[in-house]
Length: 167
Length: 358
Image (tube, rainbow over all chains, first blue to last red):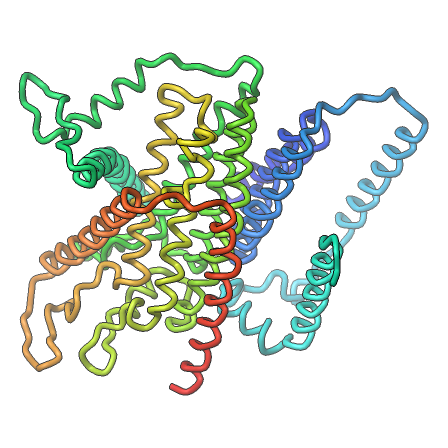
């Protein structure tokens, strides 16, 4: 059952990921990206991380992709013109393919030791909102605050850039 | 096997109830508008001369929609134009999966929780799927290849993404008080008593939170006074190019959203299925009186209390829709970013302080 759902969502994720770059209509690309994010969220749920899945849908599928769609609609992009085959494209495809093969080889060669924790029984509260909150706000409070500070700086920077005139 | 069957039965029951209630809501909306405009309202539809105060009207509406021409704009996007109503309809229905409509029902040794899915991330699930309702609107606006539809879609995208922030933040206080995102646990927490007599309902512990949450949610449903994406007197809106049952799905989705949001108001701020002082064994009044009740009666009272609260908030939303005029666009954005948002943050700070002291 679990394998079946894993294969289902993995296939959907890869297929829609491919469609994002193969579709010529930008709106269709955006819609397929949403589907890809959805399938990934489903995989998170299967990995006992429902919080990650919910946040993924809220932040990416629910907010960021709406802004993508908004921009694409405002710019009113027409269909992308296809160029011919160039040397650069072939090199790009070779490099990307090589990296993919390299990753596959490395992942295959990793042997997980039985006592490493990956194969242990998960504690009952693994991946729940409570346990994530506790580690985020108690164990790793300082890195969390530093990251929020960075994000705050980025937000202020965006506001400053977007303002046409600064008094 | 039995568990799967029970879950499927619950899904089926909730689905049928929601769709049926949505049909009745169209009638409520017509009747309420008639009351507000001092006329008798929809009462022409009859079956063999029986009119039943216009209750046949929803059926006549449905029939009419099926018989209308199914039109797809020739220069629009055919696939997305078909997909949009489904995208609008589906998330509204799915949200109800995490709302508990009753406590555990015991039949013999069988325990049936009256909720489809008790998720650990409960409220986040609602936010996630509530956020997805935008796509139906925006895609409908874009795929119609019509200026006015596109304007409606753009307005909807800006409005809904702004108010999503407000919906999320205005509820944080409630989550802090009950210390959980699980809706069932929030409802259970609301059955406790404050100062020994007042039920610990969300409205009593988070009055400001409710005042902010309520308008933000109504803005998310895109109804008057927040109906700028539709704006029937100016741009007609994102579903201008929809006809027949495709339009019907948008129309239905709106009513299902009303019902689901009403259920949410009841669940989060008005004790959900709780009846004050009613516990699993019966009533336990704060002045010491007791009244034991059989289990089935308790469950029946709880489900009844849930539906009464839901019906009240459905009616309240319809009343608001026929009372207030539409906001101007800058007023709408101002209300969200300079009105609700700072107050929601203030509410979080105040709640935190109170929780620290208590």
